[in-house]
Image (cartoon, rainbow, N blue to C red; front, side):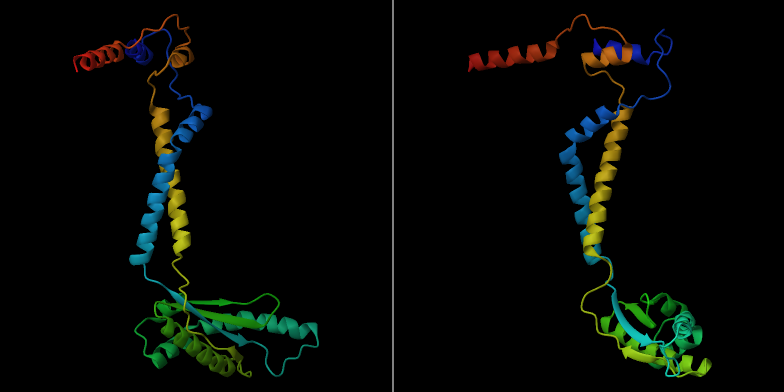
Length: 254
């Protein structure tokens, strides 16, 4: 009976034509997702574990070492607003000069690095803590000891270069780099969490699409809902009845 009603529903010639638009029942989708909660959780855990394994064995760990320099020179005092503004403007100039090509090429030459100046520049980040004249130079490298060597050499070369080109007293290095013991990236926790969330979202999307595309009639309520007709009677499935009788006969024979 349900199969006949399904063909009736799909028949475009019938008087009760269905709209081309698919009606989405958000409440129905919610209950479907709720019923598939364990499946979604399992998929999320699986994808999260795969991301963790990939992060652990396939991705190269990166370490970061940081050195700090003081922008304030001996001629600059802290007695006026102009001095403060001067120190602030100098931090912007120093940021550009530290990553300029002559400085990077000199660092590469001194340490005998087998990389280009552009590659070295991409591994450098410079931050200026708020309300300060301190520049924090950070270098990322797969080798923690090399990260320290590079950041210390950049601080030394940049300090001399700035003092020579700007004709000022070179900025003072107030903190040298340290050999990092903990990798800065990739983050195991972050990748596992992202994999878990993406796994759940992807599985939920698949379930939603299947639910929306499934237009078969499964119950009496679907008949009234989609066809707009009342159900007068329900014919039981004879297959279940026959199978039940067959099982009872087998039990009696035994």
